[in-house]
Image (cartoon, rainbow, N blue to C red; front, side, top):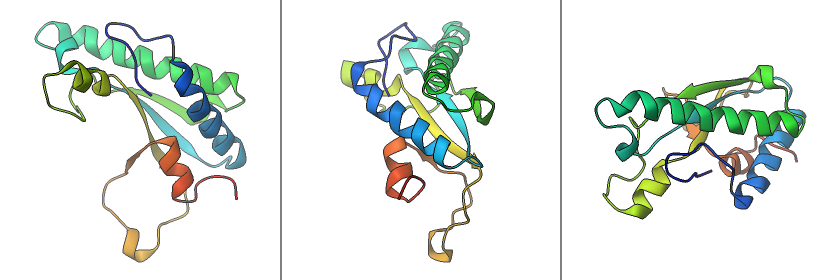
Length: 140
């Protein structure tokens, strides 16, 4: 889910299906816990502005957590995290790249069956709601 510059919200209408899907997954899998990770674009977080960028990123993640709770997800299973501008997905200096870096991601932190041996990794993956559904962490 992406956001406008300098603002944690409101969420774009395109985010609604993602939120509905993640909330459904959380309802269907009561053992699942997620980090809700907020990000800022690098232009929001240079120098002294980094503190403000981290605050914006946290506000974005909190907004998503609140929206998931409104959809029936248990908020105690959602941990808000701010990565500020430290993990851009697009390093180009364009408006499109900046927009893609102002985002919220989900990371599974607990409650998922162990992957098959060929799928094991050493780090917890950062995944979108769509990816959670693709890998089978969702309804039938």
